[in-house]
Amino acid sequence: MNMKLIVVVPAYNESRYIAKFLDKLLTYTKDVVVVDDGSLDKTCDVVKSKGVICLSHLVNLGKGSALKTGCEYAFAKLGADAVIIMDGDDQHIVEDISLFEKALKKGAGVVLGVRQMDAKMPLMRMLGNKGMSILINILFGSYIADIPSGFKAFTKSAYRTLKWHSTGYEVETEIAVRIAKGKLSYTEVPISTVYHDKEYGFNLLDAAKILLKLPYWLWN
Image (cartoon, rainbow, N blue to C red):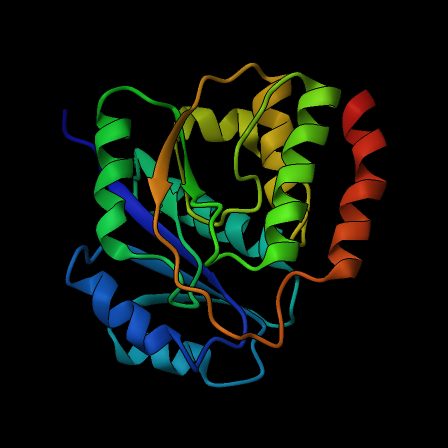
C-alpha cells in the first residue's frame, strides 16, 4: 500500500536543537514541513538552510495552531495521505517513524506514540501523564496511555474527525478527547525519548487551561 506521508514539525524558539534534529530526520525522509510559530530566534532560518519547507506565523499562536497550519498544508497543498507529527526539540528518535508507517500501512487511522514510564521520565511529568490518562478515561471512556506525547500520526480521513480548536499545548488533550468521543480506533506504538533540560514548554498554566477546558469538551 503506497501512502504519501508528510512529517509535520511545530517549532517555537528551537534553534538550539532543530538543526541536529533535521539532520537526523532528513536521512530518513525528505517529506518534511516545519511550522515556525512566531519564534524570536533563528529557527526558520536554520530550517530553510536545511532545504526544508518552513511555514511561519508572524506571532506565537501556540502549538495547536502550529499543528493545524502544518497539517492543513500537508493535506491540501502537498497531497498527503497521512501526517506524522513530531516535536522539533530533538527528543524523538527518527528511526521510530517506521513504527508509525507500518501501523498506517496496515490500516490504522490514528497512531499514538507512547513513551516509557520509567526513571528517564521526570517524576512530575510521569504522574501528570498518568493522572490525565485516568481522568480522560473516567470522563470519556477511553484510556490513552500517553496523552501529552507529541509523536503521533493520522490519516486525512481521521484528521477530519480530530480537527481541533485548541491553540496551545492543550491540543494533545483535545485530540485524546476527540478520539474518545468520535470512537476512533487507534494503535499505540512504543517510542524512545531523549529528555533535555528545557526552560520552556508545557507548564502549570498550560495544565490549568486543560482542566478548565474539560467541562467544555465533555458537553460539546
